[in-house]
Image 1 (cartoon, rainbow, N blue to C red):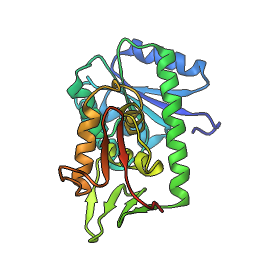
Image 2: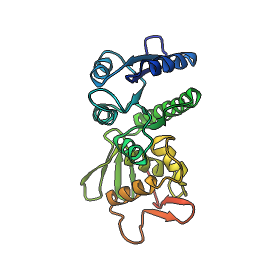
Image 3: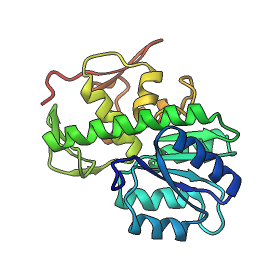
Image 4: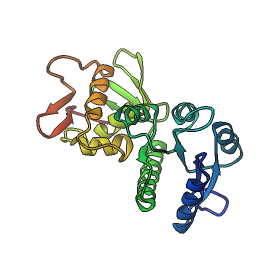
Length: 238
């Protein structure tokens, strides 16, 4: 938040009209904003100001949005919404893997963007509050560290997680032994941006199973519930 306690959003887009539109609508909902048009200016702005979220275009002069998203995730957990005209499934999955919290296509409904932004900010602040209370979660011999976002295996080996894998596992751990639908998991992993029937969530679950060494034909931890979704079958979560 800025010095007046308002939520401050960084807009990264080389289309000045889009920047004006976003700034106007953010302002209508009491949000302040700062717009830049390339990666170098984004880095300077991040060093000079404190932002609560970033709205990031993919097609930028110089470094593209994917590269900038990757850089941000190396140094910050700040919520990121990708705003782009590229709607290919592969681009959405890549954005998810790199740590974007949402993926919105142009042209967009400003009211929908604001609603998604509020949802992401609320989830981020809730997660941050929980992280301050406890730094890790233990389950079935594993330990998930909230702040460093990595897993510690029962044999003490550190298992790195992508941002999407971390958020997916956290969603399971917050609701163990409950069937979660693809829609619930997609929302937990990154917000909206993809259809609940998009098979990218199946790919994420498959990757998470490999990280958890749960790769048999009949997984013991992350189980498939046919026609419904997935369940984390653990006896105790601490």
